[in-house]
Amino acid sequence: MFAGNLTRNAETAAAEYTGMIHSSRFDIAIQLEARAKMSARSPDYDVTAVNKSGRKVRIGTAWNETGNTSGNPYISMQIDVGLGPFRVNAVQTKEARAAQSGAFEIIPLVSNGLMKSGSLSGELTAMDADNAFTGYIANMMFDLEFILIENSYKTEETHPDYRIEVSSPRGTPIRVGSAWMAKSSRTGNDYLSLLINTPDGDLRVNAVQNEEQRGGQTFSIIPFIDSGEQPQDAGAGLSLVA
Image 1 (spheres, helix red, strand yellow):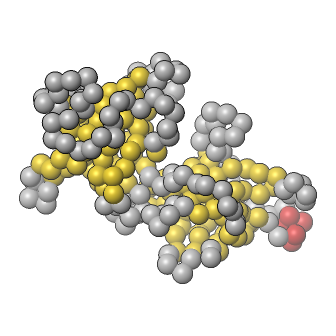
Image 2 (cartoon, helix red, strand yellow):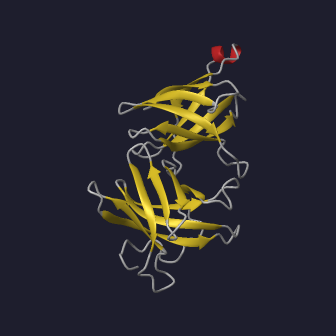
Image 3 (cartoon, helix red, strand yellow):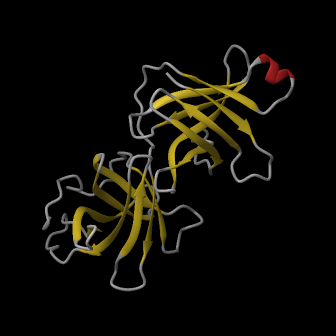
């Protein structure tokens, strides 16, 4: 079960809401930051928190909603801190609504619907030389910095374009995944598809550019959504040659 609180901030604040969410296993300070909507049902907010390494990470998404019967506004959140996704709502008491307060109470939501985890943040930046990238991927349970190096073993179209490498504590390069250059058949925009072995297991993500990033060197890492555009054999494994 979950409990918590959420408070609407002044309009000048970077995060529109701040609060806490609690369970028998954690107490986490959260923020809701407005995000650009791609459609009417796109999330209104990113839910963020700070992990053990001190990095701010995205742990979920949130929507502004209105009760079907009551007509009262509330916030629906889908969150994952590395233990599996869960749903909660942030609602106001009668007293809070009467006082026009910005205080909300977080309550658990019981749902039989299937959920996909949005529990990660990451960024990829093109380096000036050697056709390489540097980046990170993180959630509340792990924080992994890596580089993408051109795959010199590539001999076929389906082979990865890049190796994903991290450094051991002694600085030894360790391959942890593969990456492919791709183009969206829907938008025509270039992106990178990554298969990376994290402490949570093999993870598929895409590195894409939003409108502000397009034409620059920085990509945002987002959870993989199967749209039929994934490069062939992108999930075939972590072979050093393939």
